[in-house]
Length: 369
Image 1: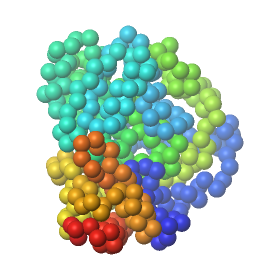
Image 2: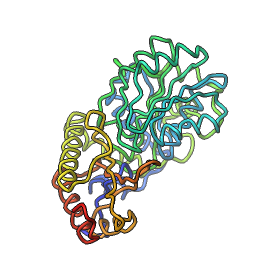
Image 3: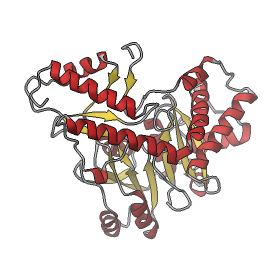
């Protein structure tokens, strides 16, 4: 372990396997049949994770996950639609900002950063405003690690005859979402999260009927998922230059995903990582921000030590020098830092990270240790 190749305990980019990195050593022609087959295989495997082949299309898109979120809102929400954005962290706020920039009418419902949105909240809000056409939900809010109750909320939205857009950026591939049981118009994820690929490609699972009816909605040429899908069906190719190496790396990462045992095995490894992290930090007297009942095994927010000698930047650099890269906190009211549980890491590496944190806090002479 060295600073040249640190372990990334972040919510993405994250630590990838040697096989995944090796897959990027080959150059691909973007119109070549072999690359087109790679894209088609990728979409087929992604759809299988949500059991969505019969009901949804998988539309890949160049760029980060936020690009794909904006594309989904811009394509699937009609220009006269209205989105109810459910917020309990920074990514919900970002989704609302996307609606604002795109000129889509929206309202927001915000709970505290440690308080999940409830199905009864959504039921009340939809009853009060019949003008809402779509509801946008962050499944796992990465700013804290909180898990929102997706199945219950989805059922209420369906009962009201409204459409659901799910930002599943930090949950897809590790937390179960079944398109046969959870009704949604769009579920959005990306290559560099729980599938353990590299950043650079988002993808949207769009309900077939919703995407077919979305021609002309989009504000953007490059982000038009209807056009992207139509062109891919017709030609097998991406409309514009694809992130070829990212696609190849994700395809290789999916092979490893299935070898590991698919979603149940990926979830279990992350859950084990999370528990090892929580137990280890608790032994140091470092408290997690969220109660266990609403903590997803994706990323954990910890209260920073209350000692004047603790400064995050110094803490971060010292832990990095020991081979681990952590993440700053994203809360506004209390000082925190975050540690990811995802990526090509296991319990032993999580325990090693806790040991590194302990050593650093001792070196900093922080009183809690």
